[in-house]
Image (cartoon, one colour):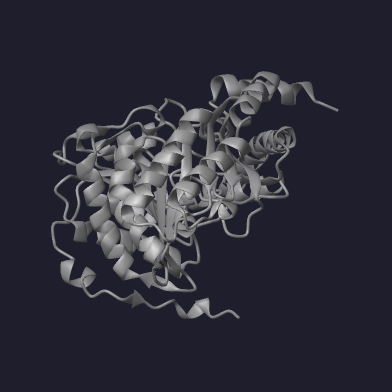
Length: 452
């Protein structure tokens, strides 16, 4: 029996507190498209994607009308392209990125993720060539997202790949310099990448996934912030219970949309990702949640503890609402996409070092952070190595999406537009880590990885 108060509460969440389904992402396997003829490969990939997802956008729009729940993004993830195009040259991978772009435009989706490579222990030729193609591919397309997994807890850290990704990020920043280096906003470097993540830029369709699948990401920072504010100065146990209860309700919305979208599309339902993903809009901020807990400003002392409580309570509430929880599931802290984070960074309370500490207890990592355009590639690699180490040692997913904004420095800001928002250029350490990065090789896996 539906409770009138529950219905009114959900309506209020949608209308006043920015509750939405952040993304419905269709995962599509491309293994059956493999061909040693590049032209045939491109044709098969385009046909498979456009055939599989032909009704994705229309079904999502109909679900919005039926249930009154906004679905902000309709996306596609595909099998890591480095495997599918393993015999291609870098130029061949750029052409393949343009094929994916054409499919995205034909279908009307926001992004296609999966222009990706997994190189945590070494790189096949296809992975090396795809990585070399990333700067041009992201410059020549607008709907394609790229990810590179450089480490796992089992394999350790491929520092050769870490070094190269610092250079790739710099190249991408230069090639998209006329748009505040926005190409780097579509590129993320991972440790322990999940195979069912519906969120960009790191969405891929994993090796153990079905031929097609529907994964949904829900989001409601404003709902959680409002609930915490209403709870007042309760103790931490009561605070955690408040977050758990509201996370349950948010996740039930995602479960409903995921199951119904999968049914209408004739595709298996995969997972619901519980992540609280903010936007630059007022009242839709993870930073505001932390400040409603009692912090004067996000980034001050106590921020990491507050985020740890939030992340844990979101997971506990969410897993009670859905049998299949996956992806990243927790709280995102992308600086440019969160109004409260932007303000905290602008006033200097939120620093890169504090963000790094926060990533030890949240869902992803250093996300959508603008840094000076003249930052050396080795420094970017050092930032990646630090963050990836947190993921490897703590057996969790971490990632880095930094944007060296070409021609800009500390005191200026970068404008990305839409959900990507804007970001102040954050200062970095001036001392070099070049000799450290130049060592190359692999950082061994931690001892606790030996669990067999």
